[in-house]
Structures are given as structure tokens and as C-alpha cells.
Image (tube, helix red, strand yellow):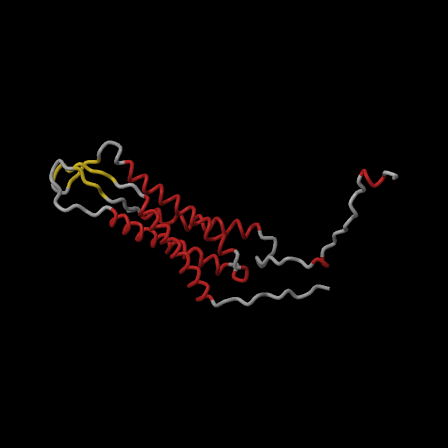
Length: 196
């Protein structure tokens, strides 16, 4: 007496890929914009034409910017796949591929937008005088940081798929009639045994 479960219709692969990648890139670009506004600049002492020396403690700001971007990528790699997992009819390898591509392209968009915002905040000084202190805009220059969001998204999708009890990754609520649960009446209270 097994009923055939209705499977919701699936969208085309191009539609799933374009929707997931498009929204992931837009959200990642917003994250890059946030990074561009929050990342600290580095101050340099001009020692010669087109050469500068970092002031004491200022060299740490390049690490600060990279660490902030990595934490932002981790957060996006955690939140976005959980949101996409709620699209029940599209769960599976196709959704995973779209989330992975969206995370990679989103990381590139976040770096481009973040570096652009930071460059607008701290414009480049032309021909600074020797002995002056200039502010250099923060930037993400290492390509290794691109993989952080994609790795986190892959881990989240893998954990969500492993925790799903169904082989087809769908989760449907069972009908109350199908549940074999016996309901017992509540135990009598102390007041019910009292004779009035």
C-alpha cells in the first residue's frame, strides 16, 4: 500500500546554474563591498621615488585585510549553501555544481569589488615627496583566498546531503495517518482522585 510520491518538477540545468551563480555572485559582491569599506589601509614612509617603507605595525594591516576577507568568504560559504539547500526540487549533483561554481565566481567578484572600493577610499598618491607618509589602499593579491568560499560551500553541501535520510535527498513530511504512534491519555492529576 505504498503511494507514489509526487516529485516536484525540476528546472532546466541552465536555469538552475544561472539563478544560483547569479545570486551567489551578487551576494558575494556585497560582501566584497563590505570588505572594501572595512579593510584597514597601510601607511608607508616614502624613502625614494616609488619606494616606501612600512611604518612600525603597519605591515600587519596587509594580513588584517586578508584575514577579514577569509572570514567573510567562510561566512558566505556557510550561509549560501544552506539557503540553496532549501530548494528541495533541485537537490543533487546539479545543485552542488551550481553552488560550487557560484562560490568560485563569487569570490572573484568579491575581490574585484572589494579592491575597487578600497582604491576609491584611498586614492593613489602621485609623486609623493621623499620623507612623507602616504596611505596605500588595501588589496587582495593572493589567488589562494579564492578557494576558501568554495571549500566551505562543498563541506556544507556534503554534510547536508549526508544528514538527509532519503536517497533522493528530498524530505517530505509524512501524512499523520501513516505514523504508527499510539496516543495515551494524560496521567490523572492529584486532584482527580479527591472525593468532594
